[in-house]
Length: 230
Image 1 (cartoon, rainbow, N blue to C red):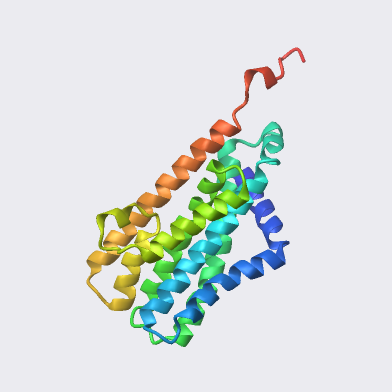
Image 2 (image 1 turned 30 degrees about the horizontal axis):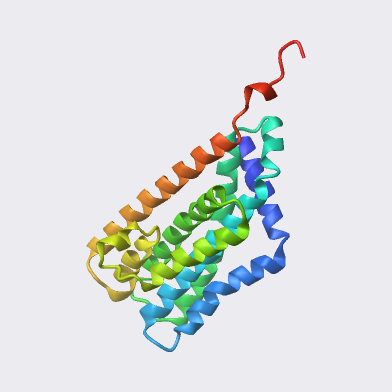
């Protein structure tokens, strides 16, 4: 556990040093929020949460891609693959939740929310899904440009696809729409339960896939192991 926390601290310090990039990513949810601010309350909040999902996923994508050069050296230094991945994921979720809490305060002050706790839960679930989503894209796609284009496509589909369709449930951020419907449109608790179940399932699936890919990429090959005599 100690090594996992060390990795999380290193990742957080590295990301926080990039103040310009963080500021631009932090502005994305605000831009989405203001774009729909004069329309229905629910639209502006949903846009802000999806903007937050894009910001956190993009941060995770760039962080995961940049780590591919350093992680093999840390692996030789005694860190296990699950420690490297879990530490990075914890740092990203921590930064995402901090940013999400700031936007929750902005929304709560700016809007007359009937279910503010549910809005906060929607934001939290969005962050927990978005962080491993970005890491998975970074693990699958070799370069940032292709990963960013794939991420933009996925978020765009989330905006455009009718959430009532069965195919919409295949999108990782479908839970955002369901919990948002409960929190903003004041529907029954079935929306909340479906959203939480979908978010938990997606988060576990994304974490499992990325952890497996990380373990394969960082596995110790026989020809690289030192013999006892050496």
